[in-house]
Length: 201
Length: 136
Image (tube, rainbow over all chains, first blue to last red; front, side, top):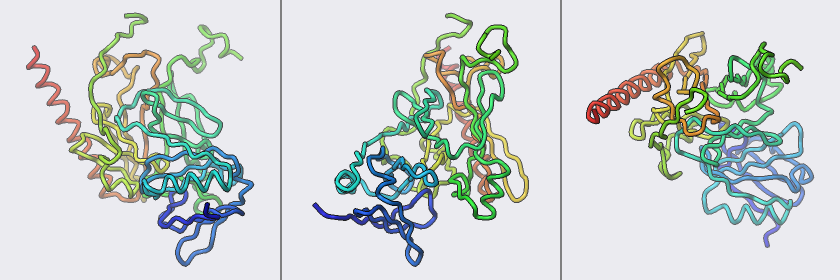
């Protein structure tokens, strides 16, 4: 068994540039050519949940880290044949079980919004279509009857991004997702306590 | 029927069957229109997510320098009368993605995307209409 593994051309958290990603005993490091090395300590990923899925640049390894300032780490750009090597090293070094998760490509917009510990999943036919990390949500509210509006960038996010204080994934691309609205039937209606006692609380 | 919600047959449409059918351009994490698959691909937190043209209701564009805002409205229940036919409802408790709003500094491309979605929608409606007439 190798003591460490290195993967080239990996994009971290929707980065514009790819970098070199290394998994070693002490933790994981990621470095863009000529840049500084970003690291996360092994303790922060030990035993964490991890998924392997097709993403934008190639295949993605998502690790739900224990570090509050990192949250869900997305490493995109792996090739299909990297799976076994990655799976083995994650298990060996950090006791992470890399689970393969297939996404739906049906193109449907109906399913079930489900909540896990750190993400909202939108499942179509029992397969996720996409996930929304809770860290990325600025605001959510009942926008109308059975309608939930989820906002990803409020004023403070825009300011924090402009000053480089906090990098949210929402600002990573040219096309930035600012809001999503979901239709969720069966929720108590806003300002309507007649037919649902719980909504009075 | 119950609760006034009619059960409808799920329309048989599907954007892609396999991962390798996704266009190469998804790597750019930008909004894409794939006319061949009758699909719009939207980047959602690093994942290219397809939406078939049949799920698209309309699109609106709004300029607010330096950003162009694009709001994509999808077909969902409770959007007024006469829309029930479009709904692929098999399960009345289904959740829907109702709209997605993007902003971009790439003004020209946003205009192009908005136009192609509208054109694609128009053609899809025309095809549906022709099919209906054939059946009648």
